[in-house]
Length: 304
Image 1 (cartoon, rainbow, N blue to C red):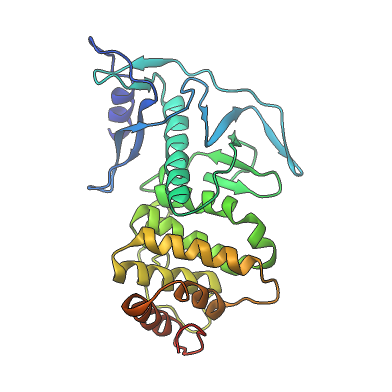
Image 2 (image 1 turned 30 degrees about the horizontal axis):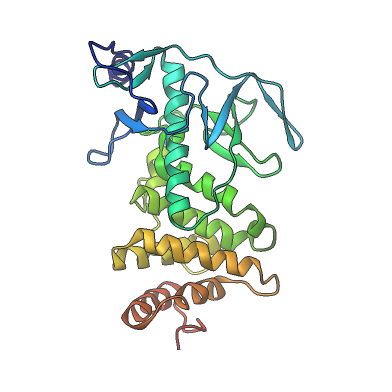
């Protein structure tokens, strides 16, 4: 029933209004209900029929061979004008492609607002052989793969704002990841939560759900938990306490980039110290209290 409603909404014919450039009707996540629905989004600079724009371009029939994208063509999506003037795909497949592009475009806008680089568009290889579900960044090729699923997930991974933002952040931090992989991954994992405004965003696109909260960044972590999970949890706890996810995203991005210029430094405390060092007064005190609690440690240099 849900799929039928989505397809019906995406194929709704227009009656009397002019098409609005850059406005599209796509499947996406409703922020209030947390359910998949039809949403209208602005996609400036995008060619909707070819599913390409400032964030990337979709290729069908392409493959990833070693470190490059081989072959492929742009989709040729037939569009209809809706009553509001937005354009919608006539097929479910093209609707899904546009929905994934819209999620990537939104992630790009958030990251740029948080101080990230306005990177050039990247190829998005649809339905590549053995590609994992969702939109996934492949650093060797500087490209994304796009695949349906996973089966049983409440929200397809390619339409999950947090999951897509994590991949966009991985692209932003690909150079840092060469020398500080854990720290870069922890910040990317956190940025997904900041975009989604949800510390449990990964669970919505897990085929088995997350009944025990293992994918929730707000959960208490056992001793010896992976570094990325500890960092993402600490950053989310601070963002939640401060009520300013965008501010936390800016500080986290600036910190991990600074860490990337120091190949001899690293670790959980080093990154969080670089975050806290950007703050002053009560704001720093709050961040330091959260970071100490999450690390069960006082060894954060900027937090005496």
